Image 1 (cartoon, rainbow, N blue to C red):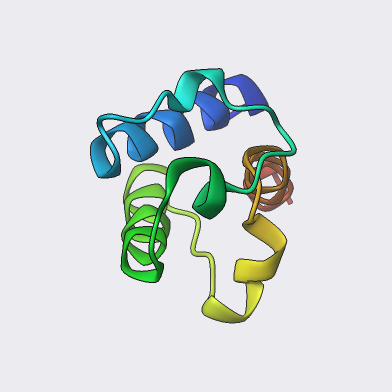
Image 2: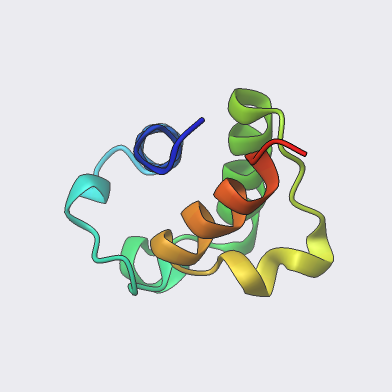
Length: 83
């Protein structure tokens, strides 16, 4: 998946978890939990949804690396790159 597809996947997952939130309007540097009022369980569900849709696991110790939309997309892109 390229970064555009990954971004769309993350936004779709965010929309399912927080349907009232305007996830598509998020700035790349916005903290996902703060901007969308996600609690820790919502964030965990987001990571599970992203893994299900991309096949890319985000271990709990890496959660600090995926706190913003931009960092999440970059993290996923780095792990989806071939070889």
